[in-house]
Length: 580
Ligand SMILES: Nc1ncnc2c1ncn2[C@@H]1O[C@@H]2COP(=O)(O)O[C@H]2[C@H]1O
Image (cartoon, rainbow, N blue to C red; front, side, top):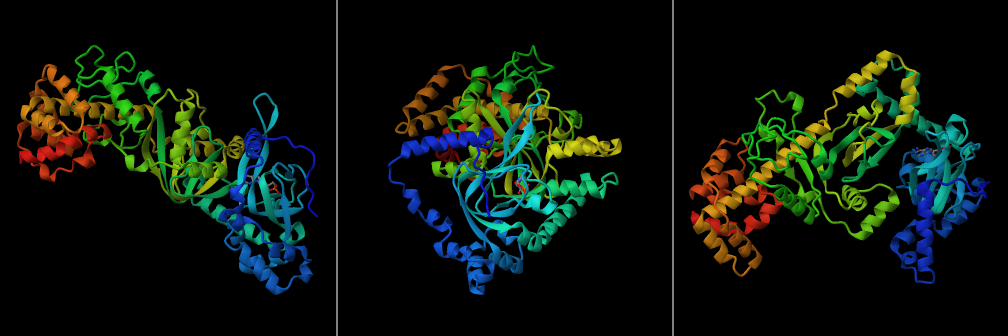
């Protein structure tokens, strides 16, 4: 028999928020026609009445055909598919049907376990008790489980009390296995899962050490979870704040750093000027970000406004760009053999696609969001700030993600790294479990893990900011050179103005305004472009166009220019061809 607790349980903040939101929605929609009740999704996810009738029979009264029918209904559910077919059929003989309304408590932490549950429809909150720094206990939603997932196995497997409180998030339909049946058929499958986790742990660098006793590894494996993520789903929003420590089992993830331009501007980080542009290009004012060697060198081509304009255009495009940066650490910078082109960041506009509101809703329900949603969340919570998302590396199979937060405190409250799936299976260990375990471990073990953390492959925040600033400088330099090239070549400007007359008065006016200013000397700029190691197409094109000798037919400008330049240059390109 299934007993649902009638008394009110202590809710987590997430749960209360959810209930409040849904109460308001319900009030708002009261009396309205609910089309969702008739949607295909709804029809598909309710337990059919024939299945309920089968489950109303006792196990001995169920014919083989009944079991096969139930089996066909449940096949495809993630948790159910973990079991072998004979076990699945055995469970079909014993399943009972259970439906529960939103807000009810299904099982409570500390109680004796009686059942194991498969969720057929709806979703549940798994709430665990936590203690804050003041010693107060509170409930926190650990995870939201949905259709296809199961819960309630820990108490039955380990013969312990319930480890969490499970409450109903949306009205749920469940298939329930009694503990006796569970004890007969299920443990083997969980043992196999535990074996898989143990084998994986042992294959990871951090755990290959004689100081990890088999017992320690087993308890880590028992507490660990395996999760799968589809492409573009956010695995970790912030590595400093996440309560889990992740290792990639299969597939790959992108490691992304979110920079707030506001913070960048206020950090006094110097930009190394070692890529042929020394002393000339300071996008950021020396009052906000200093260049260590050249504070007094005010020979700037670009004002702060210039930078704002560039950032604004990014903003307008809602780009909050996912960028690619290959970096080198400032500490390594003595190695002058490395090409400065390593510092180039590339916009990945293609990755920022619009999402429909529906998709957004769906993600909210599952609790896992996409990178786009995370970007929007950031923007929404800090509307005055401009964020830049930089792709700083990848996480491949058997690699652990950002080990440092396991040892260090986030002293300066800077944000950590973001992990986004490219399609992956992840292994996660609760940081709390890890820390408790490490407290009792030998110093050698701690040193072993720390030494691995020290070889973390990700650049420091300082390096990332420095690389970003260099990128800004370079983009700005290129933009200014385009401007100069336009001004210097009368013929070019004339054609541009004439041909675009019908298209945009604004552009023409802007060009006229530019022409009114004094023309910069193009020769030093040309020299810089030629000297620069960054020989991309735009550079080449600009250098050549000044001499009116370029061969434009081969130039794939679309691939190489920044978003803002593209607007300006794409209008020019057809005319450029006439020079050949
Ligand atoms: N962090 C978690 N992630 C997913 N499920 C959990 C988590 N913690 C507890 N549970 C589930 O919640 C259940 C509570 O009862 P049990 O301890 O029997 O088994 C537990 C697990 O099935």
